Image (tube, rainbow, N blue to C red; front, side, top):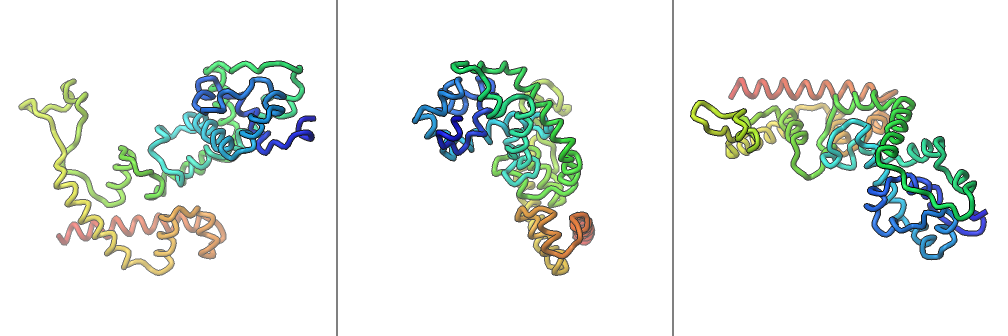
Length: 282
């Protein structure tokens, strides 16, 4: 067999490449030209060299995660950072490789194809339907919904990347317990007449007010940190650094992550109470 004759580091990922619809394969750059014949791709020195390269691994991780993400149900993937738990689940390539093997995209199945057979591209709709089916199976088996509930209850700064987004802004405002005094609207909403006042003028956020409130909020955060017990402070810092609940519970001596989750909820409630008192006294 070709596995014995040629060393191919990422051979298991080749069936995943043949699963991609043509539009997605085209986004993989040089890999788009991999021969559609399984044996030819392994025997050719050039392609075998690329299949041994870590770039091929990364390309397949990105492609499969991109296809899986819409069915995980978290909206725009670009909003989040690599530390976002659901983002990391989408990047778990072994989930999708296992599922692909069950629907016929495995090294063994490809070896059983007739010699010289060229594997056709899947239609876009077919590939997405199959991916949706695989995500649903993995979600049920790995309890994605339970993970999502915890993630929604306890978001953190590291969940979001550097780009500006409504989700990121909403999180920051909730965390800092501040809101801008005026609603912002898009130009499309203005021209459609949805947010005009009685004089036909658009409501625009006062950026100076927003900056001022954010500065005050950051001061509150620093003051609040000094009120925390040592253990609570360590839990908060570890979570903000991207540690999972399991790692935090192991580090802090909890039997399971539910204890850590309860502490984080309590810290969040303490912070809200702290901000309320500040607002009353100011």
